[in-house]
Amino acid sequence: MTLPVDLWGQIAGSFLVSQALAAATGLIIAYYSARVIYNLHFHPLSKYPGPRLVAATDLWWAYASTSGKYPWIIEGVLANMAILSVLLLMSSFSLSQRQQKSKNLELFVQVGYDAPDTGDNGISGEPDPIKHREIARKLAPAFSTRNFKAKEATVHKYIDVFVNKMREVGDGTQGAELQRWADWLALDLSADMTYGREVGQMRDMMDSVLLSSTLKLNLFLTMSQVTRKFRLFTALTYLTIPPSVWLAMSKLLKMNAQDVKMRIERRGKTEHLD
Image 1 (cartoon, rainbow, N blue to C red):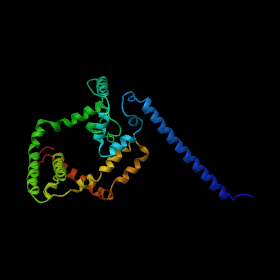
Image 2: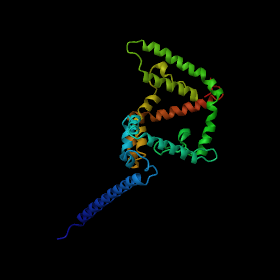
Image 3: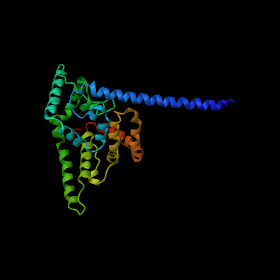
Image 4: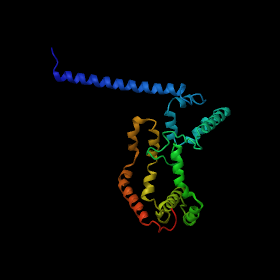
């Protein structure tokens, strides 16, 4: 008795799929097993004391990062370590930093999951000392005494609005939600000082599209950092972006382009330096 050709094809296909899945599973297990062994015994930091679970895998770090209690978890870990171990870590880090200085340029060591993944690491995340100094040189005029004095009136204006609103709204029956008002103050002030744009959130007592969308991206930002340690799940981070943000994306991009264009047209005609 012979089996039909199509049945043989189905059996062979199922066998190949099962083999591929078994091979992929074996490779994944072997890879992570090798990482655990490397982290525990061969990693440059393996000689320092600390919880073995933390050293073995990034799962502990991922949990701590998404728990909302990261600073307190780290505090608890350090509290359980001997003070001598902490001093050893600090002295070793200080020595390595001094050894890495070259031509008065310090090497800014940045871990991959905390640095921006855009190719532009910025002033706080640039590991290349040459690029870091160049970025700092470009930003230096923004922190000059002249620039600070030019923006002082703008800062006072927004702080005065904030204080007056606190008196007005805070005396009401419902009071004022400080976190929301602090968010409004921060964005109103930063938008005006950055490129002379008045958002008017404190005036209107409501979130702008930019702020409401930004606050909804907290989970996405956290997961995007975590998945940089787990590259297999990178694509899943985009599922954490709420549909309302996706729908507002085109509006935000258009609004930003218009604001930049308007700022360029007002070159030399702004009320203060930005």
